[in-house]
Image (cartoon, rainbow, N blue to C red; front, top):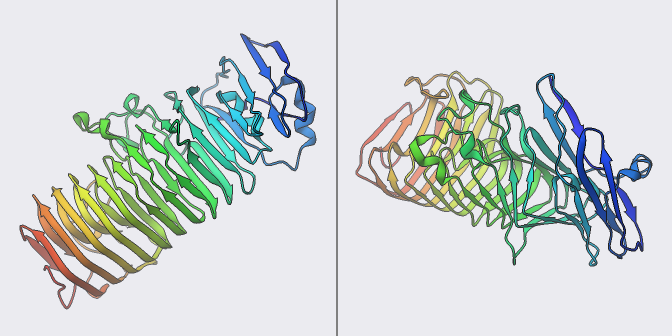
Length: 422
């Protein structure tokens, strides 16, 4: 059973002088302080502003939610401090401060502070809002959140979500407290980290460290993710990190570029969508740059992956459709200028037998893969250079040029004519 507890309330103060109010909340002996500094259109939080919030029904709300999956109600005892900037920006300097900025289009998330356990943050932002992440925001370990939950959800149109250039922003997920080698398949409950459901928006310079499982779940359309760092390298220890996908994409017109990833699963996993570009990125330690796994009914088309370095990973280039998948399709996919090193399983793999955990070894289904172009894929593997395992007649129009993956150890079935490298 899940109950939602919305923390903080909002009041808009215009031309306010600095005031300090101390109150006690039921069951909480912490002091909650509200400070407002003179400035036009500055938002501050106050428990006395409940009626203002109710009257602002048309405002876009930034909500913070405590999720309790037991019969016990939890109450945050964190001290609330919300600061109004003289520049007009709304500054969030504690977990409870998120709702104070609900009407602002200029928001600064100022760490360090911690989001309490068993709690998620939802940011439904106003159109055109700019959010600057400064310092570190840590998400405390949860016991009740599961893989159906995201610790942070961002939505809105024409959003700019960026790191502070003078005090870089970090989102810290405390994954090391969850990792048990099971990922989302068992063991302790583990939430996903960040869900993006935006339109015509940009995300720049954000660093994410130690995601419990999947890092970015990307939906929406017409979004740019640039210069993202995802460091889950600590999950390599004793192979405890698992299902730590960097970018899971189910969206249209998405570009991910100039980014660096160290994780233990797919660097990129396109599950469905079109017009997706993955450019100038580095992928370390995971399962490769993947299309899929593509399930029945999913359509993946018009994908361009260029200038990517993949190292110390299980796979390099990978396309995987689910065993016995029926409807749906994969078409017009290009991998160009791909550099591989230290690949343990397959440098290039296209397979139609995928099951989570263990492929069947027998291709089966009716989901076609057409128009696959590989150009200048090169590097070294310790496993197999190439595997193609297709249902006869479903893999067509493959064009492989300048393939130099060594040593050559290839197996190709279900495709005619055989592409270069087979």
